[in-house]
Length: 317
Image (cartoon, rainbow, N blue to C red; front, side, top):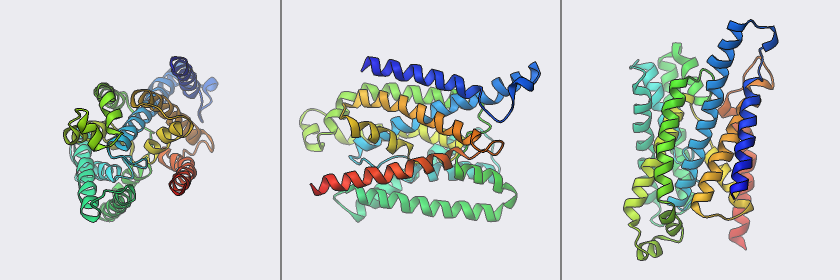
């Protein structure tokens, strides 16, 4: 495992370094001032933000899937991402001070999660994964409708709102990286501390409770802690969907793991995944940049269908 982590770290560092020097601008033709502006003002913060958001989405996905016992749970399928984007769009439309952006995104994202959990519980007392996902997707669709209404009301803000709807890392700033990175690190350390209890929770509520886990309190605590970093990241980048499902589930597809090693590998693979996808998106048809959220959807949906198919086959057998 340690060797695996070390190799991933080296690959991530090499990929990040390469990504800084790849883009539509020919660096060799620029003077020192222009070169510094592009490298240090645009590309490095974007690369760092891609890494941070990959970690935030993947780690939160692992927690949601264990806590809710649902392999298809992440910030998008639970309606949280659309809630966070709606919060950011409200800040843009009203307009409110920019510091309200992450705050309102956390509030609206958590409200979205609470609505999904409550509605799914009312529809299906057994809390089956399918019910939870369908409820989350439906809420997400409804919130997307609200976003379209905001576009109609404030057509001058169409470009800003569309950026949140499609998910883009362009314009990433060091402040956003620092805030999201600090919250992701703090949340990750807290979650890692509860790794043993999460392994027990994975065995089922009754067994976990019999082994001393305070199931209800632990579930609520970790849902909130795991929600904050991706909601803050989404408030700056917009919707980047399905990464929280694809990364941990692909790791588990090859090898079952306990929570802590799964969390660490998911963080590294998630960072690498978003970094590579974002680099491809901004270079493949340069100077046109494909939004990161669009690129992730294009790559993740086939994998998502593959995982669903495998899950259905496992159930039948």
